[in-house]
Length: 406
View 1 (cartoon, rainbow, N blue to C red):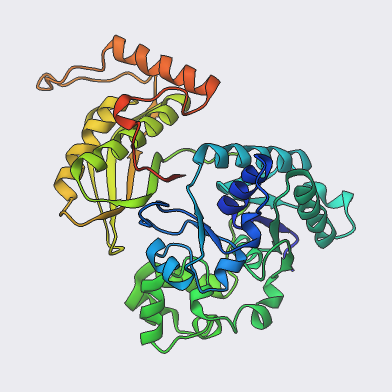
View 2: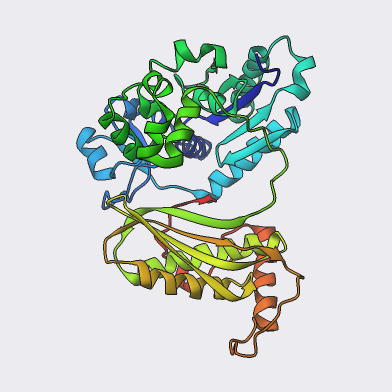
């Protein structure tokens, strides 16, 4: 067996758990986690999608990502709460700070999950399982919500182990265990095997992860290209990646958001793009980077995704330049279909103090000193008092939901 041991720590129904705790702390006598409830959508119109669900809601067949209106058909008494991204990011920081105090070698991969390298703390515990139980129990006692911990000698298997039966449990999935624990599962349970991949695999007669593991890689590649090979590797427990406690060299910075209600007008989309541009610009400036490329992504309510990118004449970290470019790309992309998700990604990063060579034929002016000072002042205010301390007037009624860093 590989000598390395990796944990994957995942908050159970993070958004719903954190919202439930906030309501209880505010004096509510009802724990959302114990009744059919969801986070997401608009409570008055019942539009949008389910972002998180309670275990009782799951028993009605409610799934994450489905339209809220469908969820109410399945359970008319369903309780729904609006997402609170500021709360979620605060809870996430608290959890990651605590886990870092247990072991400094953690790699946060989303707002509610991270990998941990067990090696630095192995001498303190009798076994990885004992350490994992300690982590989940102390998180529950300290914060009031639960986590699952997956243990493996491969990152991808640790991730899949944490997704076994929930909540508040520890599971192992070592390479030696995949034939018994992983292969009998349907291919839809494999990490990064989405609906389109599942459909393709089913057409090839591949129904279980075991079927996939024993398939001929060249056949998979002919139908699914490199993604098919990656899935074959995962099905066989092949993953040599390590826990990256220090961020790798940045290739790009971006943000995306899934909407509580589909955006159906350009004005609604423009407000979201402006807020995303502010977030991306702020992260660029905090990283002392400039971007030479901007990409806009749209996912329609049909789940079709489209994207387009543009090289900039001058690298920038300016919110306004990112926003203007994102809008140009949006106008080229949007076909009028209701929008479920919007994203902005920047690339071609360079250091902020890297000199810029202007072309004799480039008539665009650099970002003004006044604009740079304004961006810096806004960053300082938000850094001290929170993201919502100051907002542009056009964003006060933004339909933005939750954002995921890219």
